[in-house]
Amino acid sequence: MTVRFLMAASSVSCEVLIVGAGPAGASLAAWLSEDGWDCVLVDKAHFPRRKPCAGCFAPKSFPSLRRLGLEEIVKTGQRIRFLELRVPGRAVRLDTGRNPLGGDFWVFPRERFDALLVDTARKRGARVFEGVEIQSLQRRGGRVVGATARDFSFRSEVTVIATGANLRFLPAEHKMRVRRYQALIGWFDECSHLDPSTTDAFCAPWLPGNAWIFPESEGRANVGIMVHAENLRRSGGNVRRLFDAYCAETGTALRLSGARRPERLWGCPIQYAARPVGICGDGFLSIGEASLLTHPMTGEGISHALRSAEAAAQTLTRARETGTYGGEALLEYDRRIRSIWARNFRKACLLRRVLDSPNLMKGLIGLANRVGWVAGMVETHLDRFAL
Image (cartoon, rainbow, N blue to C red; front, side):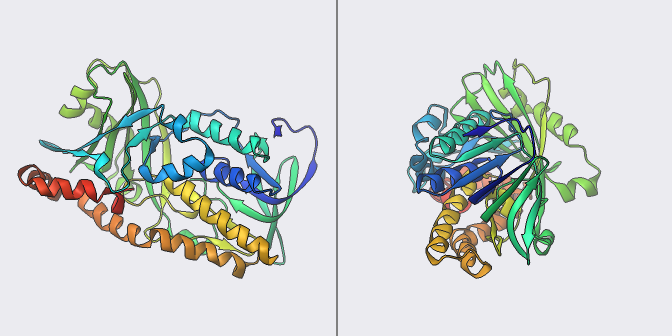
């Protein structure tokens, strides 16, 4: 069932209300609906919709994609075999396929992926409400019992927040934990000098963050930067100026030589926290970026969204068996999240400091080029800190 236009105020009841139909929310809706839950999925957008995102699927995404029946579709996208890590004047080429998971990275447009995922949830039985913006959560005695939109009132036994970078429903006690990158992304066409199997990752002293080129197909590339919001404000920097500087940098300019630049660039925040927490409470839990589960070093969010949705599905299934969705019953979700990512996030935060020190990066890249086993060690440990 899909609802695209709302003609009059109406009340909708369900077991699970999921607010947000990105990868986290739509995958959870698909899994729960397949298991017989009465699930409502709500999003303010109509699908397909443009989504500013690198659209890179790490190897850890694929067990979840397999369960969703989308693995082979994503693998019709662009296969990434190599990561070229660069600073001005120095670079090292890494084989991404040498990670212990044995899989490559793939780039697949989020506009298509998100629409496919919403359609999967719908086919498995979820009631999908497109073009509906949730304005507030409904509470009774401190417990979340649903949500309100302009034309609809949703009542649920449990509510899942999957609103991505929109943190309007983030509990106050977690607001101080929020860290933020500001990203700017554009799609370049006719990239005749670009190796479609290689992604470019770039750091520089003048860039308070990092930049990338992700080939989406022969001749088309996703080009972007993400910068620390705090550093950007302190330096009085301009994201567009930094994006243009990256495009003009010698190595980038060579890769994009002759390419047709986009008429428009897309900006978005990337929200994360240094420590992973499965945010939950009486009658609700948050998944994906809404729970600040974006990767602290790379900004990668798709695999984290899918895996947090699986953790939520397991928690909700167990809570359903006990007959309660109170705060104590949902605390298992927090335990699952910490067990999945606590060590990974600690390592990622340490390595983020390395990325933010271009002179140190330059020395390490030089070492990797001189000593073969150093590059090999990075290749075989990618899954431990960068995925």
